[in-house]
Length: 542
Image (spheres, rainbow, N blue to C red):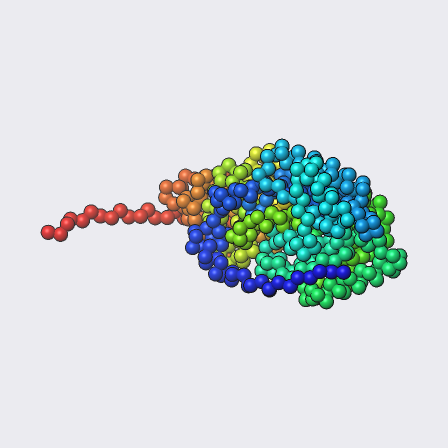
């Protein structure tokens, strides 16, 4: 029924203070020095992955920052290779035909893109089918692509690595459901621990006899067996796989959740159980139309929902989180050196965006340093959002001025960014909105503002107006023109101008400085630093 692997528990990560001190010594703060000029980082800028699963066949080409790549190309065919496999022992004939046609296309696309790297893997259906080896030979003969058939434990490991790619601090149980199998893996401290594979894919469950009760009994017994081997002391379950994402999208629909980004969507067990009941009682065609879910995916949702219900009951997690990253991203993670793996995916993605899209790459760091006096007591989590905002503040300058604020907000809340919760996305979006616009009232984005408290909205506005002032105060470097001083108890915001830079503090700069002070509820004070005295020439001693 299952296969297990016990690995040594991961060692503790480097302490936060030690890591910060080490990074500060490199003169780049706690985020480390950019890696774009490193040959090993550049080598990962475009990587192709073909994933031949039991339900879908997909080509993904990653492009962009080495630590947090963007999706340059993404195409999927719901071939259904594993449909009926449990009954016949062979790949579905129609699924095999469709999969081969898709792979022929993918091979030609890869040639057209001149991909330096293309990795092809096959999972449960191909490894378990009697004609799996024959199919692999046919694929290589017809397309030139070599399929690497991986076992359940390797599939679990790669899926878990995919979660770590976008969620370096993930700690809990990764649960990856495919068409013919479901894998579990522990993650903690940036490492993958115990792993296990089970026959809980929807295609397998379709072949279980005994009707609904027979399926429920099989699911319960299998999940209880998994719990005995993996333990139930996991606060979080990270869901990987198209069926889980479809259920999460339905949860958003039931809750009228204002955002539809699935990555890092977080659910509480009780609310998710209510959604599973709602799915069972609803018309699937209606749900499919409301959420844009494909017919092939919706067909397996009811069985996947039964598995998820039992997982919640047996493992009793405190939170269930969705990861859009899985085995394909795990393959990319596999190629990264350790020093790349431990980088912050959010900061690396924002650095890459600034490098490729901003008018003055490198200014984001200077802006961040200029604004730091406003955040002397900020947490590390808040500082990384401030740093990200400063890096992104000028990346939409090509947009029409009337829509720049909206484009900034959309980029932050909908972009493929890892290491960013939904409230953090909105915080970043509101800050960037105020980088270009004083007021957010009447915005079409208002429903998303509900994900933040009033205090968080105010903090995001302050950050946006601080960037709005700092970005135009001095084009080269605001730090060279002056410095900010913030006295929160006295509610005084001071700007200390360098003597040579007084002319930079013109009408527009003054208006934006006052706008920032108003957002802080503070009074303004502008001073000019005294010119350093010249050393008097002294006569040499006789």
